[in-house]
Picture (cartoon, rainbow, N blue to C red):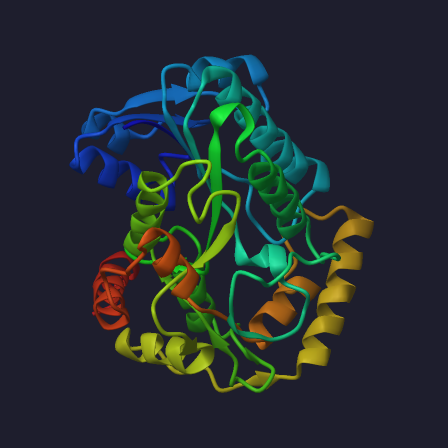
Length: 334
C-alpha cells in the first residue's frame, strides 16, 4: 500500500502511521505541523493546509490509499474555521484523490454526526445523521461524511467512513489529561443521573479498524459508501468508569451532581456571554457538552465485524491498564 495519512502526527493519525510502517507499507503524512516522531519512523512528511487545493493535489499524487484523519475538532469556535478545515479540506482531498486515480479513501468521522441530544443505546449503522447541531464540529463533520460516502464509485474510488467514539490511550492529548486535571481542581461534576452508558475506543483498536477497512475496500465491498461506529466490544457506564480511573490514580471520585437542565441552561448562558463579549478560549460549559455528558451513546460493533472484519485486539481491561500506567507517568501520580 502507498498510503497518504492526513494528520499523521496526531493521536489517531500517528497510531495509523505506526501500524502501516510496521507492516511495510509506504507512508506519507500530510499535516500543518512538523513532528519529530514521523522523522524517526522514516515517514515522508509534507506540510500543507488542506484548504490549499494545489498543495493537496501534489500530496495525493502517487498514492493508492488515503486515510483522511485530520480535522478541526472542539466544542467551541468560529463556524467558518471548522468549515474550512472539515468541509473544504475534505472536498479538496476527494477531488484530488479522484483525479489521481486513488483506489481507497477511508474517512475518520465521528458519532457526533448522529447526536440529536437524546439517548442512543446499542445503536447500529442505520442510525441517521442528525438534522440540527449544537456545535460547528459535528455539523461540519456530518457534511464532510456525506461528501465522502457520496463519492464512492466516482472515478473508481472506493470510500467509507469510520466513527470511533471517545478515543483514549497513551498519548491522549485531550480527553483524559483534561479530565484528570479538572477532577484535581474540583471542577468536575456528574451531569444528569450518572447512569448513562457509552462506547469508548482504545486508540490502537481505532487504528486497526482503519487498516482493516482499507484492506477490504473496493467500490462494491459491503462497507463501501457506508459509515461504521468503532469502539470497544462492550460499552461502559460513563461515570463509574471515570471514577474507577480516578481511584487508580489516587484521586477522589466525582460525587457532585448537576441536573442536566441546569447544565444545559448554564451552557446556553455561557455561549451567549462568550459570543457577546468575544471572549477567548472556550466556555466551561456548552449545550452540546451538557447533553453529551448526560446521555447514553453506545454502539454495536456487529456491522464492522461483519463487513470488514473489525475485531478489537486490546480489550478494555488491558486498554485501561496501559492508559493508567501512562497517566501516572505524565501526571506525576504514583
